[in-house]
Length: 274
Image (cartoon, rainbow, N blue to C red; front, side):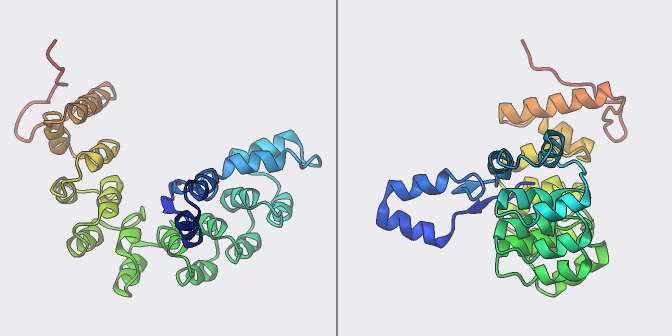
């Protein structure tokens, strides 16, 4: 999961008062970086090395997010290492009662990871919607537990539309409602571009956003991107966008899923002139 975030206000104050040293201290924390995704694996590997009672196989499976014994996960959920607790929060075998405990963890990052677990009991997930941290609230809104009608209800209740747009179950009509109301949000363009519910109308909205190529690249990674949009991007004025689009067309042809222009023959891959 990608959880782009800023360092806490305390560290920003430290930067003002302490200069570059404060910035370096913040940047070097992989679990709580200055800017970018959390990286709990680095700390978990270090902390697991001190747990001699655990087998190498269990350590490997925990780091690789593979199922291990629920009793062992319950024990690891009480570890002083937030990096280990974060790995427990995303393990597919973590039992419901352990997930409920992790949903009340004092660390924002652990709660954020717990919010995305598909087996987190609904009552605990509901509680995370009012978490003090916006990061946790947004992760709860993106949970795969919610169904389409529930997401409509959450949106009408005033919850963050950008986060709801990142939910894989958000229907196309809801995505467009959020798009029309939230025009101008850079995160929204990314969420729409990667949605499995994408439609040509949503694609047009994303392309009109003028993201400078970032959202176009996200569109090109979406396997549900429509052929007309894909073919259009193959002629994009930005060479790297056009190249990525041609590569995507080539992959579809190799998989027997060639694009067809409406009312015309199948479109062959367009190769750059030599």
